Image (cartoon, rainbow over all chains, first blue to last red; front, side):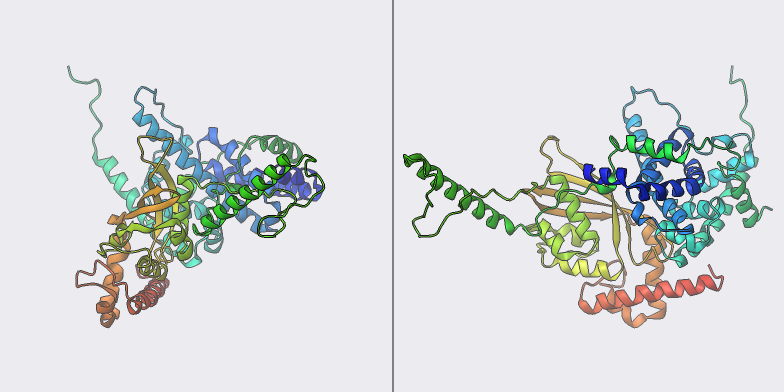
Length: 193
Length: 302
């Protein structure tokens, strides 16, 4: 990181003001975005990473509602990086059997007490990753197809096709999981003697 | 029976942030201070680029010659100063050929030596971006690129770097692009890596525009002397074949049967011809296929 670049950002009060406004308007939504995709212990770092990028590139941040989409785009990449890091760590743990393996907390841990919601989240986990992200952006961030296209950097038409397919596959997977759950008898408790 | 829309509504309710307590929001100015402090140790990956390799390895002889010239000139000056009882302080030195050497020694241009990792990733970036000149600059003149031909179903033993342009033209025509996920050395001696296995995610045959993909692929690269001496690629075809390649082939056969013989090597429809006429058909038909699928989607067909 260039010291000069950092110094320039430190002293420019206009840019500080722009950043402050950006933070006030969008911090909560960016935090929710990260909360929906990461375990709680990773959220604050991810949010900081998003705003750090925004601060360094404040001149590139668009105005108005476009700023939110721009921040979502950055957050999407930060979360993706975090997922890859977590996956690598998990693979490393698998290889190093001497290392105590602890189950990792998920973004959806709070849903454990609702079977239906747990089931639909499990169903979503089986989708193509980009399809699943389109679904999350539409259902949770309440974005339109055009807005999702900006966040993910893909064509609006591709978003519509992905959404169409994702909804269909989500329902299919949900029904499959549900029927398996209802047709599987409870495992005998107490073990064999 | 639960409908697709019911499941979607359930998914909306499954929002993990839906019932979050209001998170403590730090006051903006304080947050900026915290970020500024954080920036002293956080590395912004976006600002880091692998060291640029010279645009062409053919610059190296020029740089070497320039450096040698500087050394000779500096040596002449040093010897002249040493032999001159006055130290040569105010005299202009003239070399044997009558030219005036610079009064201050030049320095060799600062160049960052390309690491094997940066060569491997640089090549992949150029290849994925269809930057043929840059990709060729990373390849040794006699690089073994058979494995890049084989990846697209063409066996061309002894293929040259120039031949590779046909593959690159075809990849560009069908909208191939990739993103590098990881590039890791596969050497017994990690201090001097030569062999790299690189994982990428790719889109091809305009799969991104179809709302499909990305799909996995990998490259195996050998780097020696700052150049890629061997490159091969393996497409992860399981999903891609079912979701993209086969439906597209079927569409071509149905809608443009006259093109099939131009585009494909044989009636197995498993490999493309790499001729200019074929590449043009691939570009046109993959685009038409996207348009046809979009039209079908808007009509509610699946």
